[in-house]
Image 1 (cartoon, helix red, strand yellow):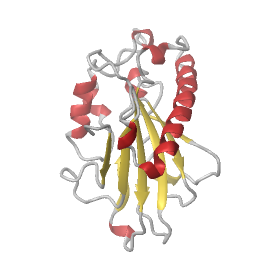
Image 2 (cartoon, one colour):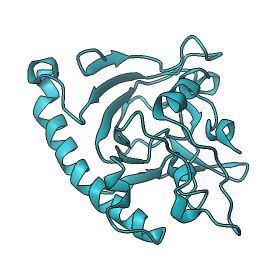
Image 3 (cartoon, helix red, strand yellow):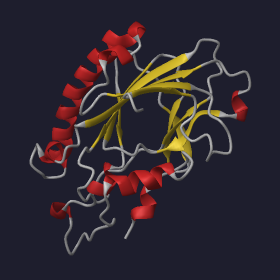
Image 4 (cartoon, helix red, strand yellow):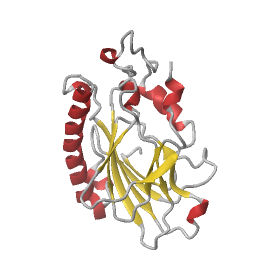
Amino acid sequence: MGKGIAFSTNFDLFQSKAASWRDTLQMRTGPAPPHFDHIPEICRKELLEWDEQAHRLGETLMGLLSEGLGLEKDRLKEMSCLDARLMVAHYYPYCPEPERTVGIKSHSDPGVLTVLLQDQIGGLQLKHGEDWIDVKPCSGALVINIGDLQMISNDEYKSVEHRVVANSFREPRVSTAVFFNPSKREDNYGPLPELVSADKPAVYKQFTLPEFMRQFFSKELDGKVIDYFKV
């Protein structure tokens, strides 16, 4: 990602017990996009426009999430939660033995919020209790995932554990997500002081973004990382 854009096949190849069945194009779009010429020409215009629209939607959603916590509308925005954005486009080719692998293993997103556009093939599942529920594609709709904002909200919001099954259809599956993350790497994060009281003590300890990301990348992409930061 030295140029702000990269192509890969697995997030956690050297930690995981099995490779995931997908290819990925990822592009850092905030605080600053990569050099124009580094973006693949075939999708350059579309990726930049998608980021612009997703940023506008993200700002609206951040305001709603802040107000839902009883905070000022711009509270999360002021914490730079809109600034560090990563766009990820996944390509899931046909898998002849889908029962032997997955598209993406179970995880929650490490950022604050994710805006996801999926096609009509399907394959996304979320965990509800001990069961996995299909998130059926809906034409023209976006999927909004709460990420590990769960810790900032002191468990008022819950991050969504989800996965993608391997594609058993002959037609490839394509999805595009924009991840919203804070950009102030040296600041401390954790339960907001407005959300901590004698009746509701802090569930998580304070941490910096580098500390959080080191823990996230030190394990395979399986389950949630937030338990590590519990008080």
